[in-house]
Structures are given as C-alpha cells and as structure tokens.
Image (cartoon, rainbow, N blue to C red; front, side, top):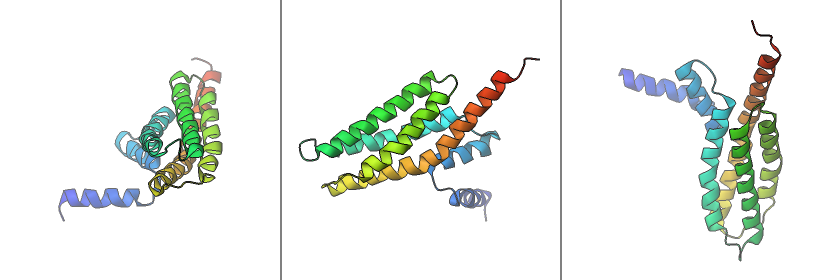
Length: 159
C-alpha cells in the first residue's frame, strides 16, 4: 500500500468515531497544531457552517405559505447574528457561553415544533436542528473551558 493510501486510511479511522463537523475540525486542528483550537475558532466554524443552511431554508420558506416557519428561521438568523456579535466582542467569554446556551435551548425546540408543508424545507430544517444539537454539544464545553482559562489567567499574579 502506498504511503498516501495509508495516510488516507489512518485519517478515515481517526475521524470515524467523531460525529460532528465541529468535532472533526477540532480533532484535525489538534493533529496539525498539537493543541486544541480556541473556542472562538470553533464557534466561528459553527456559525460559518450553519449560516448557509439557514439562508437556504429562508429561501424555501415562503412567508405567505408558511409564516410560522419564516418567523422561526428569522429567530435562528437573529440568534446566529447575536452569537457572531458576542464572539467579536467577547472579553471574558461569559456572554458568549450564555448566547450559545440560549441558542441551544431555544432553536432546536422551536424548529422541531413547526408544521412544515414543503418537503425540501423540512429537510433543510432537519439539517439545522441536527447541526445545532450536535455541534453545540461540542462548542459549549469548549467555550466554558475557554472562560475558565481566562478566569485562571486573570487571577494568577504576574511573575
């Protein structure tokens, strides 16, 4: 077997147990840089991955036909914008963790409760729910760890 094929097989094995894209990103980052990515990088990856799916779903959600879906997707967009704004302004990270927790607590339940008539839109909303649930299970602990690191640095006296 060639070296390239061996590498491909090893990479596939390494990622086979990892369920979410953000976790794959984090694992690949660790492999390359020998350290975990910052919570900010992980959150940016999540927002960058979710935003295009939401935009596609918004395009399929005709407000006249499915007003509840259009309103729910607007809420998702607002939540992503709040996460992005908090991410850019994060100093202690506590506000970022709060935004992520709020998003995780509200968005999946909101989207799962919708009665959607358009099957293509149903598929997009299902993608959004699965992505939010799976990825935030990785992101929130990463953000909490980042906040703890910042707090530890703030309380450690300078040498």
